[in-house]
Image (cartoon, rainbow, N blue to C red; front, side):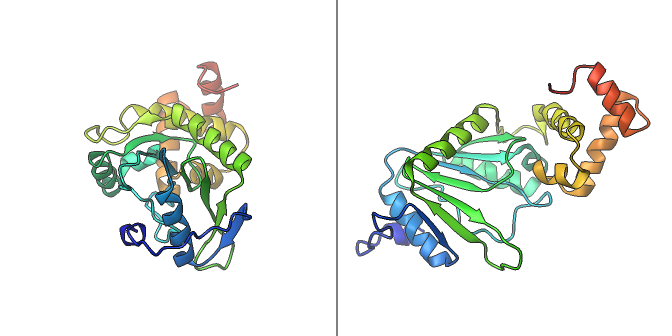
Length: 231
């Protein structure tokens, strides 16, 4: 990425008439990202989910963490705190100046560069390499930025020295209860909060033990009476 940024002969990768571009060529995506970074006067915002409790193996683009001093903010799901490997990576990022928070509302990948462009993966069945949707349309980019800011404000600062989930465990379990109460299936809830099925089942077991419940129904009733469910 740094080589692309430092190449004087790099041509602008976005004709002015383009508003939304779908691209499956990683090289072209990197060119577009490099072009956006060269012209970014403000900050980079990124959201990175986890897949099955571990970092995804294939990414349509890599997050630039050091780009000519441009500030970077990064959002991960709370469950990233429970992985030693992910925590080590986040610790290195914070040492490099990246601001990191975690939240239960992170369930899709997103990179926003300045106020000009957004990069989103467009995963479809049967695709080995995800298509990346590059958005230049101002109103759409502004909406994505507002959504990001909402999630950021609701997040919790990542502290590299905190043990495992730290103070976020209660938030995780409250979110699990809310999503289950809304009628979602276990596998859907697990994906929404970035957990593996095994980790999700452990949390359910812990919630039932804490509430003294022998069934999901009893746990739901006890959680409602305790005021643990959202409206």
